Amino acid sequence: MHLKPVVGQKFKSLDFDFAFYYVCARAVGFDTRKSQMRKIDGVITWYNVVCNSEDSKKSSEDDQANARPGFSIKRRRLSKRCGCKASISFKFFSEGGVSGYTIEEFNEANIGPTLTFNVLKEILGGFQLVGCNVGDIRNASRDIKAYAHGIDVQMVLNDMAKKKEMSEAFTYEYEVNASNQLVALLWCDSLMKRNYHMFGDIVAFNTTYNTNRYYMIFAPFTGKDNYGRPVTFAAGLVSNEKTEAFAWLFKHFVQCMGVAPKMIVTDQYLGMRSAIEEILVGTRHRWLLRDEDFKKEFNVCVWSDLLEPDEFEEEWNGSFKHYGLEEHSWFKTLHEYRQL
Image (cartoon, rainbow, N blue to C red; front, side, top):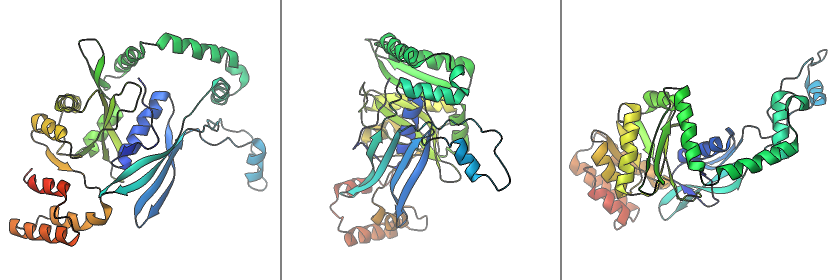
């Protein structure tokens, strides 16, 4: 199963960006770290994420040059920095009252046999400890691709079954159709469960476009910790965006966690709304707002507990008249569902 970012792919927020690339990277076999970002007026306009092994290790000469006067470096620690070029950058956009982040640049790891050998050499501590040469790695890569052809989904399920054997806290659920093709998959580990029970009062749920090899739609459940950093609670794949597919995800998410979230935030897709009403009966459902310029005034109106119904209508109408949005179809629909 192959998830692959595509330049131009759009996301509703950086949280979804990070969750998507984190899962993609882990599926390939590397960890990520945030590298650089740019802000304008408090809004993050650009963010870059790189492989954890990006950059090159320092040489012994560099270590000695940076040592304190009168001291020398006796032993160097092993470094996992191998100059990996895998990276992704997200750029903020705002079009037609809708804002979010799009993939501006994506560089694949492209870890070939030579780089793989160098990584193993650095991790293990020397050429003599690797136990193979570059040719052996190239042949092994060829054999693995030939072996996995046509059964890679089953290999993923087998790997998840092994994880379940190793850790009772690991959970995965899947569904196949009459042709024995995978149509839905949900998984979470012990860290995701711990994060959910600590920070999962409010869950953000969104789906990406079906741009991977199997046209499966990636659907992460995310949130934020006490420091405002994004955390992932679970991740899923579905073959379509129908109510039944979302209901399947929500049902197994609740079974996995043992308790439904107090609030879930999604986009305005009605298929999600129907599934939430069916499965997450006691969960409050809220929609995402993307226009940063309008957001502050809108929040004062919508989230205030001090406004009476007639005051709310007055504030709502005044704000939308001021911004010329009286006939905006999205906000008119939002107003119709205000009792949600």
